Amino acid sequence: MKLHGKAVLVTGASRGIGREIALELAREGADIAVNYSGSEQRAIETAEEIKRMGRQAIVVKADVSDASDVEKMVKDTIQAFGKLDILVNNAGITRDNLLMRMKESDWDDVMNINLKGVFLCTKAVTRQMMKQRSGRIINISSIVGVMGNAGQANYVAAKAGVIGLTKTAAKELASRGITVNAIAPGFITTDMTDKLPDEVKEGMLKTIPLARLGEPSDIAKTVLFLASEDSRYITGQTLHVDGGMVM
Amino acid sequence: MADVLERVTKIIVDRLGVEESQVNLEASFKDDLGADSLDVVELVMELEDEFSMEISDDDAEKIGTVGDAVNYINGKM
Ligand SMILES: NC(=O)c1ccc[n+]([C@@H]2O[C@H](COP(=O)([O-])OP(=O)(O)OC[C@H]3O[C@@H](n4cnc5c(N)ncnc54)[C@H](OP(=O)(O)O)[C@@H]3O)[C@@H](O)[C@H]2O)c1
Image (cartoon, rainbow over all chains, first blue to last red; front, top):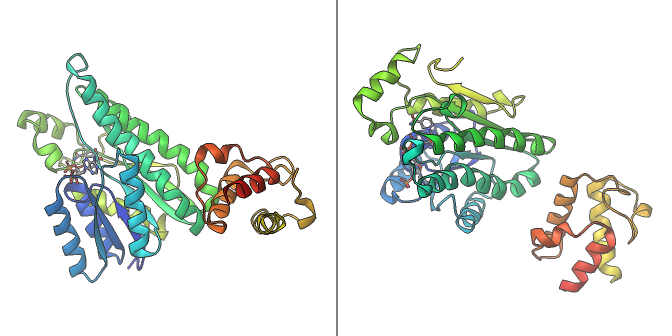
């Protein structure tokens, strides 16, 4: 097991990619704090599945865009596990529309959850990780943050912001044994992409050299790599896990 | 007062690896004791633990010398 006894916080672990990340890291021996904001039942199910593997799990409700929620979430996690080794910033939303039709509130919501949320969670865990002189922070960006995407100005700006934040945090924290990396997933089948029209999905498929949509486990396996000792000499990087969409 | 200075000095010596004789009230963490910004953040964190108090980010930014730290702590106790 690659993460035996490690304490992990995964944001947005009630559903989709976050849930799969939580399960994958638990299979490798980690104890997991399962964060959610609305889907309480789904979060409890994730935690139950982790406990069935013989690992510890707690469920923590917090809106990642709310500083006091985030501070409490991190405190509860450290209290439960006595430490915090790995943070996975996964929580995210979409509010797609053409620039001309995009409401200011759609911009703000996506920025607050997808970018400010990563800042707040990162800030909240640094104290503990600096004390421990070790830590792993893994941010889930998106391939569209690298290449742009019509109809997602807010989301793309936030996800590109996450890549810049990743590099800066990596530079600030490297001397304390903390690595910070990002993953830019391509098109992954979850609730987030299920709601797209079929013709959009088919159009996407044509742009993927490996000719299939990604699965949450494709991302979870990459998170495991970045969380484990195997990646100890990697920091500030963004790994594209997209079937070759961007090269 | 002496007690606070003693405890603060011990933390500085441990954390920054300087000689006790270098630590006086006028000494600046960055200019005289070789600390970088992150070292100062960590020192403040340790002072918070040592003296069981919370030092806000705004207040922490004003702490530049050993004397600043000692005065701040004395003012809060
Ligand atoms: N699916 C893709 O193709 C794809 C591609 C690139 C990047 N990504 C990124 O991967 C991450 C996960 O996406 P997904 O596809 O798994 O999405 P999803 O199925 O819609 O799940 C989103 C997760 O985020 C949580 N969340 C939403 N707002 C939150 C908030 N304010 N505070 C805390 N948690 C919140 C949700 O929890 P609740 O339900 O409890 O609110 C849920 O667990 C996101 O950052 C997304 O941008 C996805």
